[in-house]
Image 1 (cartoon, rainbow, N blue to C red):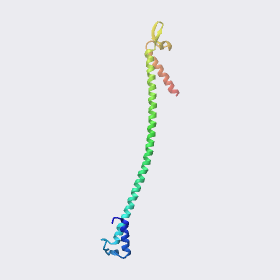
Image 2 (cartoon, rainbow, N blue to C red):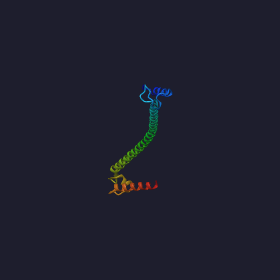
Image 3 (cartoon, rainbow, N blue to C red):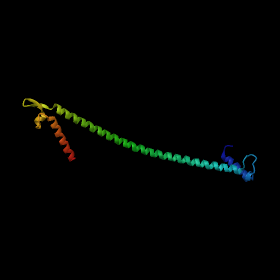
Image 4 (cartoon, rainbow, N blue to C red):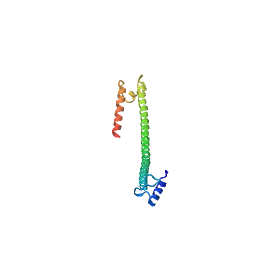
Length: 152
């Protein structure tokens, strides 16, 4: 007999018939009916405890799933924001590289004819010294950038 409900029913019948109580043996049962009921009660209590623990574990797992989903959502949003910032920084870096290339090109190729001589066009246009004009252009650009930074 593996069904607990059946075992309980037989033990309760034995007790109701006055058999097996107070330590009297029941011929078909090795232990008395009180012992059987006591064991069944203990098994039921353990089953209830197991069910409560299983339910709590499931509820906590479900709750963590919700928390994990929120965490994933926050992390995804943070990653997306970082990617946007990275893309903006890369675009700004590319613009700076282009500006630097234009500046280098200007300094290397800004040569024209002035009074029959090949001299940098910037020297003529901006009243720069023939010797050291590159350094002077850099100094003036740095000064202009510094003024812009102060006004921003």
